[in-house]
Amino acid sequence: MKEKVVYQLKDKAIWVVFIFLFVAFTIANTRFITPNNIITMVRQVSMYGIASIGMTFVILLGGIDLATGSIITFVNIICAYFMVHSGMNMYVAILLSLVLATLIGALNGFMPALIATVATQTIFKGLAYIISGGTPINGFTVDFKIIGQGYIGPIPVPVIIMVICFALGSFILNKTYFGRYFYAVGGNEEAAKLSGIRVGRVKYLVYSLSGLFAGLAGVVMLSRTNSAQATAGDGYEFDVITCVVLGGVSVTGGYGKLSNVVAGVLIIGALTNGMVLMNVSSYVQLVVKGLVLAFAVGFDCIQKKRQTT
Image 1 (cartoon, helix red, strand yellow):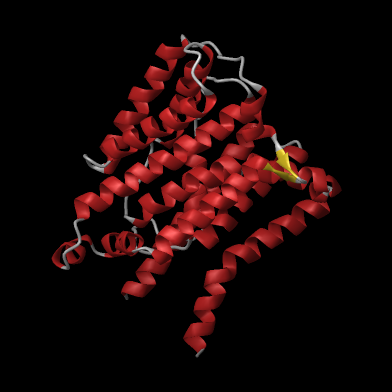
Image 2 (cartoon, rainbow, N blue to C red):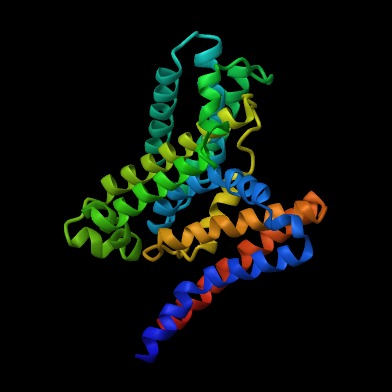
């Protein structure tokens, strides 16, 4: 009974940290808790949230996807190019862009994760510059702007998309047999092979889903900023990995819950928004985020060590 209570406390600790941060920033600056600021904050983190779902699958597998930022950038550029320079229908352009993002993700599954994602990170960042010529692409339809700037009632459309994506990701992990395979392969790849799981296919699926969700985040970002930039996704992989690891997904694979990743996303959003309101330097913000990631990884390693001993 005592062990169960301890487990539940650990499981909910991330939400306690979020509430503490929320209260601290509210005390430091009363503008933090205003409805307009809260809506702005959740809209800003919607891209992190969408991309973090695919990253959660990858880290559950014991892998890493450093190409997330480049996929976001590439989708920004290629989707804009399709619509503006090729005169393509908005829905066709979005669909083609997401297909390309998924294929890039699948490509990452064919090689060791670190090497593959570093390679695709470099390749598609370069392609984004080649396609755009290093200049912004503008001139989208009003309908396209709704994806990133629209509202349904008081709720921003990007937030609704993020919630739907989290619901879909949770369904995949908890209600499908291949979702359980993610945990099995991440927990012990050799045992998964011996039990009949086709590990290679699971990896292709996971990296494909990571590419798909990163691509969707890229489409939402493009609509929100209303301008395609060849630097749009720079550094996004770092923030997305921080959200996932902070949310309690083990860096060694096999353990984690999407519900806690939501808290990780909100913490990063609260940290960024709160520090901006307090006029904290962008360089200091980088240091703080780096320390948060280091703390999350260190805590995970300590937990793993305790379980082993």
